[in-house]
Length: 273
Image 1 (cartoon, rainbow, N blue to C red):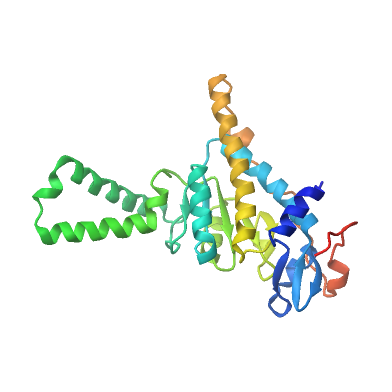
Image 2 (cartoon, rainbow, N blue to C red; image 1 turned 45 degrees about the vertical axis):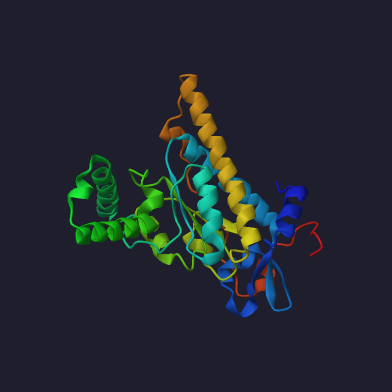
């Protein structure tokens, strides 16, 4: 059940602003409240309900000990996601998505091990035995690996879920996760297709304030799940992956009919924009 106070916070963060009406994806119609000045307005009551559903599922995944991989390469999202994911001790990708990151995970792990090997060379003195030209080449390789893969060094196996900001931009990540049946959580704007996502959070994925509000909420839920896991271990009752890993929602929103007016769900009481 949507909380009016939470809806007001989402409103103040600008989560309700969608894209221009001419850029919309008709499948987002069930999440759209109205159109204003050529821009679609997202129904924040649905956003609040979907955010609560996603938070509960993410909390269970975190409690099971699985990692949630955050993906956000757009300029206004990368710093926010990097900070919040790091605080929650979760891996993240904020530079270019490495092709085969999930479907060819073994090769990606080899690249991460290469980075670790270079660090070991520097620690045991082997690095100093190389020529100056070789050291420069190794340093360049290390810097490149750190930029692209440094944030996933602790991810030793495939993640339990993906959290994506802007599914249209990160379409390769979406396809790889679908191929491996990895649950996808995402901020989905009015120009994206919600049918590709397991846990849709209809929201403005362009404004940094909106991104910060949603990411803060999900990382707090993940932190709670990690705390539950820690207390469960201390109490001798660690949650199993089977018990903690959530299933995808039983039924996604129905496809939008051709007449948008019939598909838009109007809340009982809408906050004034």
